Length: 251
Image 1 (cartoon, rainbow, N blue to C red):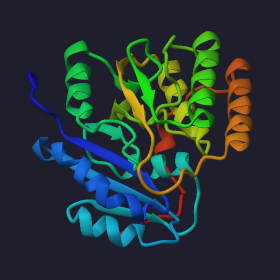
Image 2 (cartoon, rainbow, N blue to C red):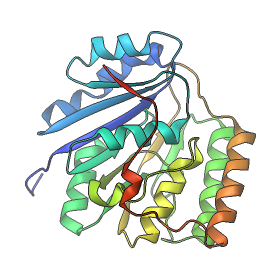
Image 3 (cartoon, rainbow, N blue to C red):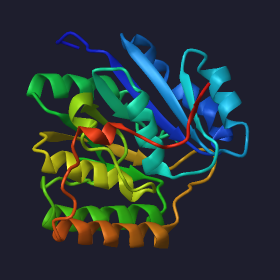
């Protein structure tokens, strides 16, 4: 890493991820070398031992808890509002991307003067391995639609693994609580004029646990989001977005 490394918060949303947390702890070993690192888990209403297992494997992490499941977008919002770093990264609890990409993504953000950098499997130099078609195909198709009709001309609009400058992200938090909130936040970020760069990445299949994504529900959410974008109803909110009424406990 060439530039001084800023303080960094990583938000990891999770729901019923107890089986995969030992593997996640192993996968995140490269992060031990990252200075000024804060890890925040957001347990989105898990019914298994996710909270306890996360605390056992990540004793220095903060564990934020939604008493009931609220959705991926809500979990990202909760974690971001609680983060203290100059930069805020989002990372999948299923470790479907190589965690070792994170320091490189931060370096690119700093060196290129970007506001966000995202891991992009649908970049021409990216790809996927072992990912079921029912997950990969809709993600790729949705991203192509947003690339054609939305801001940014990016290759991937649905990827969660991203690092952002916190001050701008706070103005682009997702208002939609489910999976489309990931894309909604990126669109808001771009509409604010944020410079977003992509890093080619490989999307892997999860090794433990099960996906919480429901394809028809997510597709309907993206249709609604795309309609809001095309009708000009996705204008970014002001800094009052930072106020949240999401019920959450800090453990």
